[in-house]
Image (cartoon, rainbow, N blue to C red; front, side, top):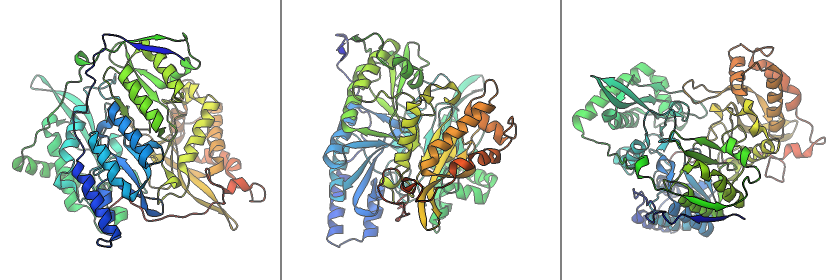
Amino acid sequence: MSKTNLSQSRPDNLPKPKIQWGRLEEAEKFAEMVKMFRQGKISRDDLRRFRLQHGAYGSRMTDDYSMIRIKIPAGEVYPEQLEKIAELSESFSIGNAHVSTRQNFQLHWVALEDVSEVMRGLAESGLTSREACGNSVRNVMCSPLAGICPDEIFDPTPYALSTAKFLLRNSMNQSLPRKFKINYTCCEKHGMARIVDVGIIPKRVEINGKMQNGFKIFLGGGLGAQSFVGHQLEEFTPEEDLLYTIIAVIRVYDRMGNRDNMARNRMRYLVNEMGWEKFQNIILKERTMVKLTQSVVIKLDLDKSPQVLRKVSVISEMPSSPPGLARWLKTNTMKQKQQGYSAAFLTLESGDVTASQLRSVADLAREFSAEGTIRNGFVQDIVFRWVRNEDLPQLYARLLNVGLANPGALTMASVVGCSGTTSCNLALTNSHRLAKEVQRKFLEMKLDEDDDLRDSTIKISGCPNSCGQHEIATIGFYGGGGRLGKDMYPLYTMQLGGRADEQSMLGITTTKVPAKRVIPAILKIIEIFKSEKRAGETLNSWIHQVIEGNGNKIKSINDIKELLKPVVMPPTIQQDEDFYIDYGNDASYHTRTGKGECAA
């Protein structure tokens, strides 16, 4: 085991949370509401609306246990907060936490009577679950690379945190037609600005001889049973108009959104049915009214400049090259725009991390990150930023000791999978477990080291509702059920060619793939690609060439579908009994769903 000593010059003033997101009185109110429910003084529906507004989902097929979603604005988490989440997980949950695709932490299977205790613990550490669920503005996201990305114009993190602070508990968004999502991103490459209700990308233009900060703002995107790519509101939105624009959009959606049909009450349906130009004009007029009647200012905390970063120096005694270091450096790290520093990404399996590992992450953030925090990412990962390049081998060795040094974080081998039937009422398949199986297989095959696959993604949802973001994956899957005769088996619909960058597009539905044939189907696609690829093509770019009809021998998605037919053909239950059992189960597959809780 390696030995580590921190330099005597390391400062003791470790960073503390700057924003208190939580309120202790909300924990007390939650406990009171649960007591009234048990006494029969309020209905199950009344409790449901209340607990969703406070970030507690009902767990699969029961209201007696909850999934608590912890809001992490901009994905920014401090070490003591990680330790508190670890403590709460061990005391009230299942001993681990889950990182979602929206930068939240989630604690599963918390007894209803214990939810208030978890909320109290969160508030004590500056965190909250308020409005992490329900018909409100959800967690305000920001790219984990914001502030360090070589391609960014300026750091949007302060804007994201200020937006989150302004909107939390704000009366304007306590009872929207449905959930509402805001994403900030550092650049076109590292975000999802075009597939949320409000997506924001920094931009700078010259006005009257002076450079002015502002944004490109996209509206009306979103993923689900029916998905849409967002529209850019205007060529340039000055920073002083940012919050006015967000307020205007929320007000228009609150006033005009469809409250009668839950299946069509997200803002993207309003934009689609109204037409973009009409919606755009209404938003711009509404913004003018907001500016005339309200005075709002985004207060920015800009003290994270390189000049004030803690100077961390790690002196270590360790093997010069721990096993697997070169592979990890290639697939899990990227150079920051600041010379001498890198970001290191943790490859988690479907976002799962144990309480013990969370404590280790907290310790490592203190020791190795010059900013003293970590960021949750967009793909169920955790990111250490501001790590000195010379300290990366030591960080890797420490991660190796706690089981967090898996390679492949920035490659196709890092597979996204929603919670699926492990906890979700709407799930039809165990997407959570399937994502782990794909990831383990790909790492075993060392596909993470294949540069042809590096820029591709695999995302898996347990139903059509896109919590696993399958529609913006190079290869995406959403769960369902198949039948051969009287026997049912878990099945996925496969989509190809999705992406969320400046050329955002939704995946093209290709074919049905049984759960136990997902891995063979992906490997077959890679085999076809390898036989077809031209010089310089990656799997991702090749699939888009096929979609556009510019492939070599493979001219269309239908050609891929035909070649996959032998792979996806279901056997009889007599031929392969395991085929009819979903991953993580020990009995024959059947579909079973409950009432969804995505809306209050």
